[in-house]
Image 1 (tube, rainbow, N blue to C red):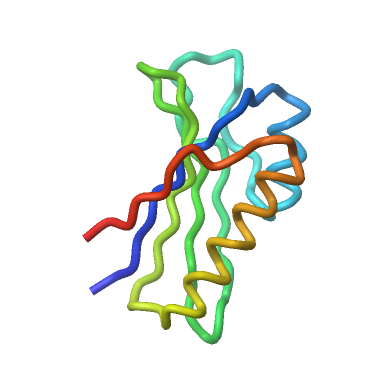
Image 2: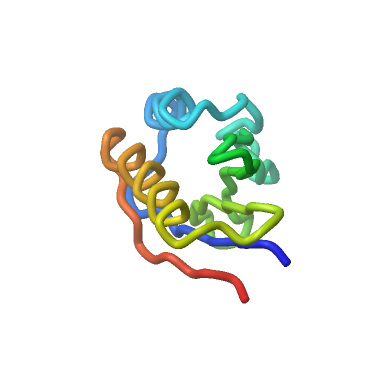
Length: 106
């Protein structure tokens, strides 16, 4: 069983904002904004209390909406997952973005 969330991003992501968000979260540099078919724009694995939490930044090719996918291979304690989500939300806010919605996958 895993823990998995989807955070839909609100706001406009241009090249400068993308670079800042990648730096804030430690994301790798993947994808090209000018290429409409590029979807994955960065990924990183954080270690949180001995567990890996994978974070990926995606742009939907049809809607052009942005999202962050977070996944842990095993369930996280509620306080730990809240801390991870808060850290990601703070990174978004620091780059002028926001969270449109948070969905915990079953």
